[in-house]
Length: 336
Picture 1 (cartoon, rainbow, N blue to C red):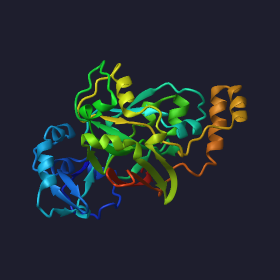
Picture 2: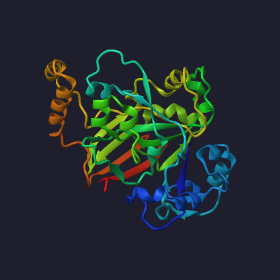
Picture 3: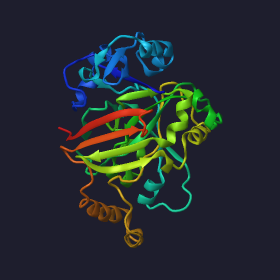
Picture 4: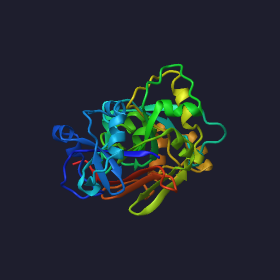
């Protein structure tokens, strides 16, 4: 059975699940006053560890096990203020178009070559922090994603089979690959469009897996809603390149270390959709500047893009609760 770990500021100033500003979680006080906890139902037991980073915590699994087995009653989770359970700096790598439903939405047909891109780790934010839309971004989109947290170094050239996953992957986190579509498409620039501060909400839990838990990954269901309206809802069975293959492909050129994060793609249901084929053929005849102007004129009528005051809620869990990564509640606000 997986073990849920929570990283906190140590504060008790708000109710669990209520969103907060992104300003607090990045300050020195939040980092120095933080702690690690094992979550058991509605209560949490502090882990007796000197670990500051995620990598250091993963190297102290005995302390995690001791907390999980403790007879202490613990502290109400509702009294704790969650930080992202993946500490930064770290490598944040992501897979592009890795669910069949997303490929269909994006207008892809046939085989899709596996593709990776990087995100700045400065984009990682807490599970209840406000997502800030930069002033120049007009088309802000959401992408619920399963994150793999590395527990061991993955050297270049490594071949990862399914049975090898427990050797390299320590656990899972819930993430949202927030995307500035007008930057992404007009500049063909994934790094910038997905790397603004607060563009990778992560957590609340780091689910540390036991070897037997990996056989349940395909049962994980990703859900995301905006203002209570469902937008994304798929299981990992919809995934194209699954974790073992993804790590093998990534290891052709990239080393990963403990505490690094791999986002594994998003299912269909994002605000961005490919235009109809007829419109696409007409747009292909236009100069790039006119093509994008026409495209975004049409997108401006799409009500699904995120706006000031929206609330994004996301979960990832198996139906039986064996693996449950908790719930994100992240409001949207315009940059001031």
